[in-house]
Length: 62
Image 1: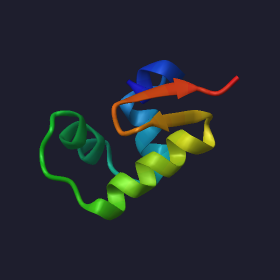
Image 2: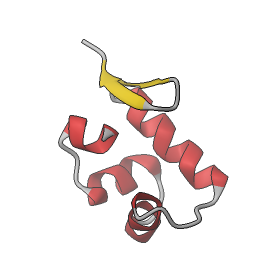
Image 3: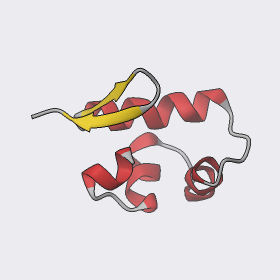
């Protein structure tokens, strides 16, 4: 949801987070991911204005 709100491709998220495209794809498919990779993706999304809400949703800051 967060990536879609920013209209980012998986390639864009991977580049901004410093992880591989396969890492993004695996995470979005619900497969196991390293916590360090998840933290990097979250940080990149938050830097772009995404706010995570109680672990259940996201919103784009104005």
